[in-house]
Image 1 (spheres, rainbow, N blue to C red):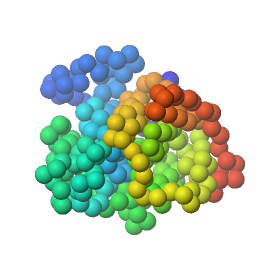
Image 2: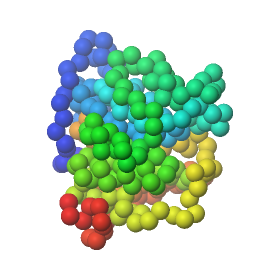
Image 3: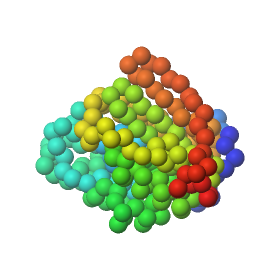
Length: 256
């Protein structure tokens, strides 16, 4: 089990919640104490598209008490092959309204702070400050770098997940203990474009795994991908885990 846990307030369960989450509370090392930790936790998910939408859905299903969600724009037809919180009847309407509606259908007790814009320099500090943990699902490096900088500065753990075509990676970044995003990617790739090839099933697979990383950390059980990068090749169903190290000259985390 990871030894480093941020302090958080556990929230007691009512009778209905004990019934809803009864199966997962029998997971070894989790129990009712872990469920109460989830119930009292707040998680920021940056973008709730193909990847982040599944993260948010799984966290809501698991009983995380509060989600801080940042995703701008209106639903487009091209969203629907992978963004499972968007529906065809909502084309042309704000994505955040669809996101909140779908999550509330699943978990009416869920508290949602929905932001109708993507992560940007004006909102990132406040939004990271609202949460116990960050899950980075943004497609653009500009947003990812902003989240990374604030998560490190505020001492917040960040689950980093990304997909491209049939490939993906996940790691969990802990300030002062692990590499940060700048250690792994000192500069964004010049070849990166906003639109990229992807199946919804790839996003969904990785989104579920990223949600589990958050659940383990918040619930205080299991082992996170600390100082490890999990690479997935879903074309061949091969998974490999690599040890990763901090950059002693990193402009973001070297002084932590």
